[in-house]
Every structure is written in C-alpha cells, then in structure tokens.
Length: 261
Length: 253
Ligand SMILES: Nc1ncnc2c1ncn2[C@@H]1O[C@H](COP(=O)(O)OP(=O)(O)OP(=O)(O)O)[C@@H](O)[C@H]1O
Ligand SMILES: [Mg+2]
Image (tube, rainbow over all chains, first blue to last red; front, side):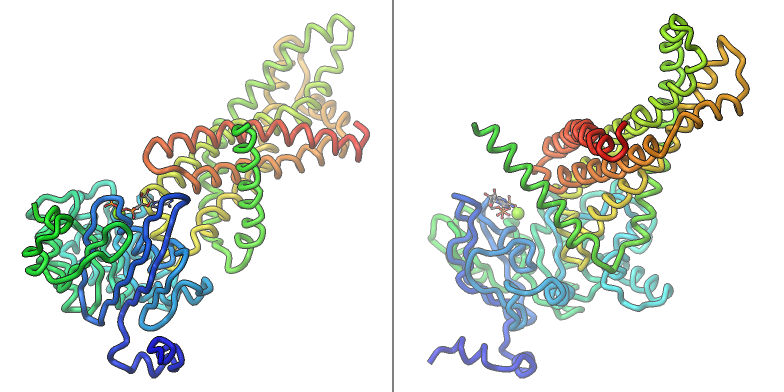
C-alpha cells in the first residue's frame, strides 16, 4: 500500500490537524537549465518548528532549490508540498496564499531601493490588501523593526544602510507577515564574524518567538551550528548526506570535510 | 545565420511580452496610484528636455527654410510650411526620440537592476504581480504621456518658429497662428497624434522588456539600458514609416 496515496486522499483539514504533516516536503525534485542539470533528485522533509541547514558549494543549486519552494522557479519534475499542499501546480491566487505563509530572505537582501525602510516593510502588507488602519500598520512596522533591533531607521533609504542592517531589514520585512516558514538564502555571507553571530542569534530569537520552521542555506559553519538542528548536504544535485553538526563534523567524507576547513 | 535566428527569437519574445501586457497587464485590479506616479515621472520630468529641443527645432527650421522660400517669392508660406512640418513629423518624432533616450534607458536600467538584485523576485513572493506593478504601469504611462508631450512639443516648436519669423519680419502672433492653422487639416493632426500612442507604447514595451530580461551582473544592466535606447529609437522610425503609409491610405496626403 502506498503511503503517499493515503496522504493525498486525506482532506486538507484533517491533514493540518495531524501533527505529522511536515512543514515542507520535497520529493524527487529535478531542475535543469538547458544542459546544466542543477537538481537531479533532491529529497528533503522539514518538520514543524525545525530548522534545517542546506550546505553546498557555490553553484550547487541551493538558491534554485528554495526558489522552487516559493514558485519563483518551476521544477521540471518532482513534488513540493508546503503544509501538505502541493505548490508546483497552483494557480497564481492560491500560490500567493501559500507564499503569504513563507518568508524569503534573499541572498542580495532585495530591498526595494526606491522606497524607504518603512515603505519596504509596508509593501507586502499593502499588496496583500490586508484591511488595517494606519495606526495598526505603524505599530506593526515598529514592532517588526524592534524585533530586529533597528527601531529608528524607518525613514532611511536602503542605500544608506550597512550590509548587516540590510539583512536585518530584510528579515523584518518577512517577519511582518508572520510567516510559518522562513527560507534564509545565505543570511550571513559577506558579514564580519561579530555581525554574523548577531544575525544568527536573531534567527534563533525569531525561531522561538514565532515558532517557525526554516531552511537555512549557508556555508558559514558557525552560523549553521548556532541555528540548525539538522544539516543536509546538497552535492551534485542530490541530498548527498544528512546529520546534525557533530555527526557531520566527525564525518570522514571528503566532500563534507571540505566545509569544515 | 545565428544572428538572424537570434533576431527572430527576440522578436517573438517581445511579441509575447506585448501579448502578456494585453492579457495580464490590463486586467483589474489596476495599480492606479502607481500609474499616476509613473506618468508624473515619465511625463512631467521629460517636459523641459522636450520643450527645449522642440523650441530650437522650430526656430532653426524656420531660419533654414526662409532663404529657399524667398527665392521663389513665397515667403508668406513660411508659417504654414513650418507648421505642417512640425505637426506632422518633427514634433512627434523629436519627442519620441528624446523619450526613447531618456525614458527608455531609465526604465531599462531601473528594471534591470531590480531584476539582478532580486527585487522583482521579492515582489513576486510578497504577493504582488511584478508584471502588473512594474511593467504594465510603465507601459500605460508611456503610452498616455507621449501624445501629451508631443502636443506640447508641437506648440512650443510653433512658438519657436514664430520668434524666428519675427527676426526678419514683423508678424503678430494671432496672424501667424491663423496662418499656421488655416493650412492644417484633420488629415495632418489625427494621424500625427495617433502615431505618438504607438511610439509611447513601443518605448515603454522595449524598455520594460529589456530591463525585465536583464542578464546577471551590473554589465547586464548597462546592456539592457543601452539596447533599450537603440531598439526603441529604431522602432520609432519603423513605426513612423508604417504610420505615413496608413495615413496616406486614409487621408491621401
Ligand atoms: N534563472 C536561471 N537560468 C539559468 N541558469 C540558472 C538560473 N538560476 C540558476 N542557474 C544556474 O543554476 C546553478 C545553481 O545556481 P544557484 O544560484 O542555485 O547556486 P547556489 O548554490 O545558490 O550558489 P551560491 O552559493 O553562489 O549562491 C548555477 O550554475 C546557475 O548558473
Ligand atoms: Mg545562491
């Protein structure tokens, strides 16, 4: 008997009530760009309230992987389920619904550089046409900025912020929608060790406070050690190996060792 | 051969982009606020440049045409001749070229850098359709603003011409004005305004297409901006050529 078939047959409501419905479930994911076979057969399951790091060298397809989850890139084959809902074949409106529960922190921050920090934070709310009063919106903006430790930069333009501040604002912008899942694309790359540590601590705070699940893409081992309960190594398009920090650190595998040097 | 293939490939892509504008971009809900903001940026901010160039064109054209007309003793035709040139051709084309340079490049660069810094992706995941918010609003704004700019350019060009006539002669403005407008017919004005809508559409479309499909890296952004200007300027002339044929069919110029 096929387990997956049973799972599909369950009504959605029952599935969400069922505690074992994973936050994210990726099965046999494949994606190529012409002759470049980036993801060949990738599998990953993330439980609710779990932080999983995806480790892989540059160009291994980490960003492609998480862009598939939010529907920015359409996979060639395979399934992606977010809280039991298949996201690959959704219509735009349903996809937006799923996306509103996913926070995405971009590798390049992706702050809108023609808008102020405040407008950046307001943008996702305005777009989803939440009916909120001006006071409520102001309060939410203030709260999100306080959560990342920057309550006083509301009227600055992103271009006048430092790299670490931009990362924080990017995080605040995703937090304002109170996501259930956060996808971090290299949250600490390009930052000094002290700032990296602050960002990692912030990620943990968010994890506790908002009870989120996360995928953390990184090759910064100290950040991974701090934030992730489990590590999956993405190599040659497959989920090559997984384990916790200590297990990987003790691993004899040449590819895994390379990340600890 | 591969150049030809690439050209045809890109032409298909641009056409698809245009089809997407009509099918996706024009669907409600409309981004009214953003359309108004873009119209302000695109229309109002181009006005000084369009104004100055049109003024100079009107002035120069009049001064240059005068000697020939004097030779035939047809000086009195100067206002109507210059008026027709400006309204039929020079106003619309000068406006379109200036806008292709100014607006085409800025749209190409802006969307291009939004693309490479993942801002367009960020918009997409936050529930905004970037095609509607960024592309459709800009194409609508250029399509609506170009005709207005062109009409202003006509007016300023004609005023420039009036000043030029007055260097050698004294003509009162009302007389000059009536000389210009008596020689004009609907066959001059309607096609000339109509084609500016198409110029505006082409400039917005190409700028957005180039920016939206920008390659990675800052070089990609530069290339987008540059080719947006080159292609939209060329397109303005091609459209002008088509427009004159069509106008000829309807009005027998
Ligand atoms: N839109 C795209 N079109 C074509 N190729 C792409 C596209 N996006 C990614 N690629 C290719 O897929 C491969 C993986 O890219 P990806 O950005 O996922 O790498 P990454 O693992 O995130 O690397 P990094 O650590 O440098 O960010 C690269 O070879 C890249 O060239
Ligand atoms: Mg990446």
